[in-house]
Image (cartoon, rainbow, N blue to C red):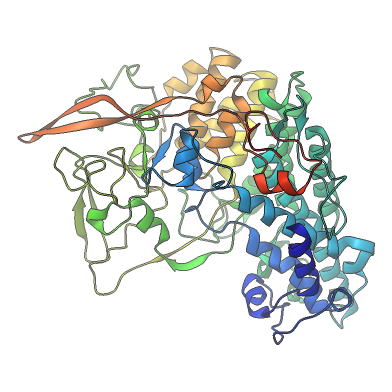
Length: 601
């Protein structure tokens, strides 16, 4: 399989450079006519060499409507896929077959990206080319591209490690086969490197990238106006130095977690805190210092592909309606492809920040369950009898999730199975019944400010407890920034937070449980909770949950809620994803992850 793919990439850099030109933000990838070019041409052509890196961005996810975005939450206690025959649904209940692996494509994609970067880096090929006539600008561009190649390789390596790293059937913690040469064929001799070796490789590539990349693609960081010909915001959406720092924080965070840290090495948490704090400081002290820059109190705007919240984001789809189609029910012309669970809804506490049933101010009534809740709840979930205003003409839609209502669970194939629909990422200005349908850009915020705060808080708590300072900040203070900021709807967050004061006095373990719930709320449907649950878990019982939905009966103007209806029993045989079966057949040296013994040669 790889012999075919790799040779194709080597022989044909690109058939139509228009695709690459669309990826590039800086205009350096000028289109050239469709043609077949050999490897010698590739490594001698400035356009083709830049195209190798530009093509890599085609292989980075651009939205949340896929199996490494929102659908990945359907393998957790957050959500359930509506289609029972979908590969994700079948994996969730433990009945998917080797030929129905929803993650096969990502293994292939990542190694395609690694191949391109290795071809660029081999024998210094990417630095031997003259890209621009002006020597100074040529040096700036050459350095940036050289660093970008290392950063992209680190990105694809991290994706492989996060998705496929795990304990092998041989009992060892394994990562992926490390490749630093443009390999043409796979076969005998290719084995998975140890998990620790893979971590070391990613960190080394991040360090190499950081030496050459601009700290960030911001015009105000470029000293000379003429250098903006090459540097600055024209490169927004491409790898920069601060992204490699953030990537290191995420790598250390996972490496420090119980499943991948059998010796409990706390220095890994220290490094996670260090790098996360470096990114936080950049955002708070540098990005915040310019007009329209980052403000930690502002709401996240999911429709702004240039949002200051972003550390590293994908290119965007202009005027997209994918997320709205995905989340709205059939009654509002959506597909209702997934729904939130009752367990996820219960993760949101009350308006004063206390968990359900613990607030001294707001009593939780399970027969009137959606009042006085954490303000973040209302920007994440569409629930029974909620009315929203949509479109430019302010048309309203009411969610009828009661028995016999148009949005009732499983009443149609376009309703969720949970009696909840998802609001996060949804643009309320869209209404398909209007003559002119308003749409907004959608992109994927691959690494954002919130992720770094959560990473820092978790790491700092493990080092110094909730209130001890690490790098001049405490875990409690960091998480307060997220709880107090405006919601996605622009509503006021939890400003006075007595519960945060109380839970911070209970010690590291209690605060860690609290932080996990905060992470769940803040990163929901972004495709991260799946990996969080697994890096924290120690047994399969931590993952194999019974999931529930409310059954709702309408009685006059009121409703009766019954929370005993089971949607799904999760049945995972492994805490890890399988190495794709095709690779197990084609590459004899690969070791499968435990729990997938039937997916071997």
